Length: 156
Image (cartoon, rainbow, N blue to C red; front, side):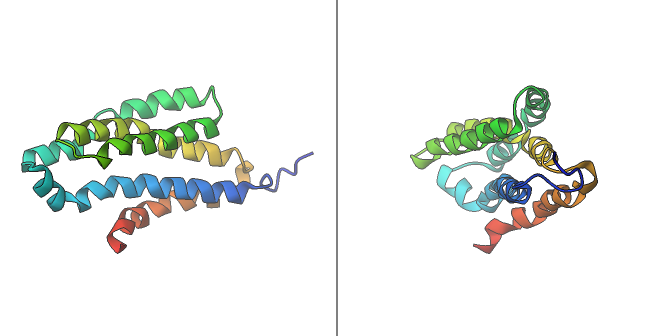
């Protein structure tokens, strides 16, 4: 029988992996802003186009968050997290070649779809590993990383 006062074995390892997952998620949102001037110069974008590129990420972000949230109630959260991570990776491949404005625009829209449900699904996954009384610390560890994750690309 599982002790209700202790987390499942491996819970802190899963929490660390979800922390890294969310670190990548939040850092990715900051990267476009940090690359603004070089990106605008290289792709010869206007400020309006760059604004569209930045906001395109959030076009379908909330829709996917709701849809995937309901889907995650039917499938295992680890499968949803894996699908999101794979999709994030695949979305980046077109950026390896010479691109016009439409490629990063489409990439940011699809990336927003893939990242929209990340936080909710990550918390859903973590909560399954801990009894109700012990969920506070692992849950608090992820939102706290939001600011540090967004400033992480600035440090390199």
